[in-house]
Length: 140
Image 1 (spheres, one colour):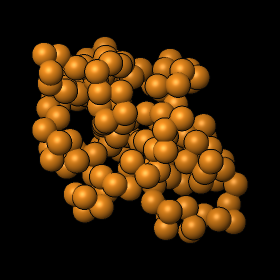
Image 2: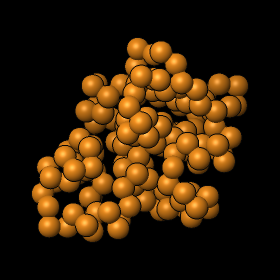
Image 3: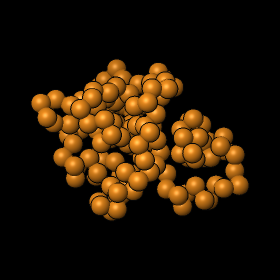
Image 4: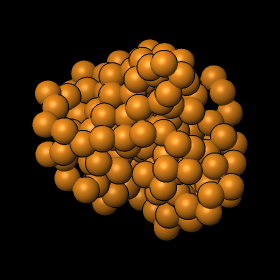
């Protein structure tokens, strides 16, 4: 598996942000919201990177889905990837695991994790609003 933490830290330092939308803007990755049947997807078309997001997601979920799809855009540039939370977040495919790890590294800083060092993974997941398997990925 790629050293995703280093890759994420590179982009966070380079653009001085952990906001996935700002990073996408700086990388000229186009994104669009729509009334989709899925939560998000990444597509590589004619040498351009596109992310499509469901407009009906909460702010928190938009950040998560965007960070996940940004992970695909950076780590799996030439592949088309679809993110459907109820199905693909639970799959063990290498690309999905890497995109999930990318999202968690981007959205949850080491400093935030330190605040929860005495908590269980379940408590951290509930407090931060992410699934337990995502928190487990972040803590690896």
